[in-house]
Length: 114
Image (cartoon, rainbow, N blue to C red; front, side):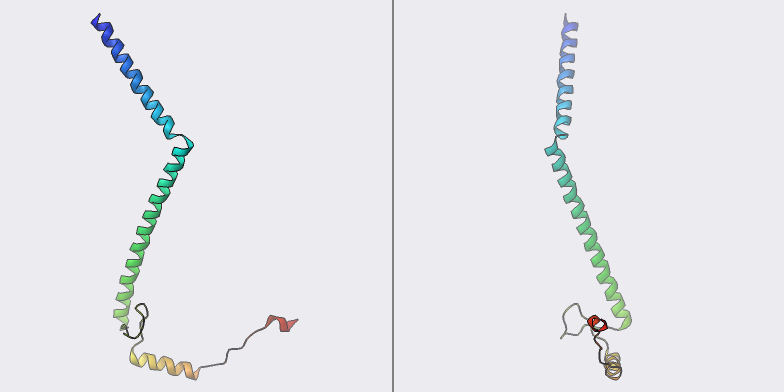
């Protein structure tokens, strides 16, 4: 008698467990649930992409600082934060070359050909 009661109880518990498991899987496969999972994964991918972009930006800034130090470019307090000034002699040379090689820009009008 106890043996039958034990197996009956074990079978009922297995049936309840299996039914619960199947119902959970069916709820995961509903269109609303699939849409929510896709949205969550898209947000997660967006966060990972943002973190990657911030890492790249930090690396770029670090490398730019290294190159500025190597080339002797220093920040000019009169300029915005992201613009560096050429050192004195180079800057004067660049200005002189610009004045010497200054050519008027010719505009090209396509309508004059027709």
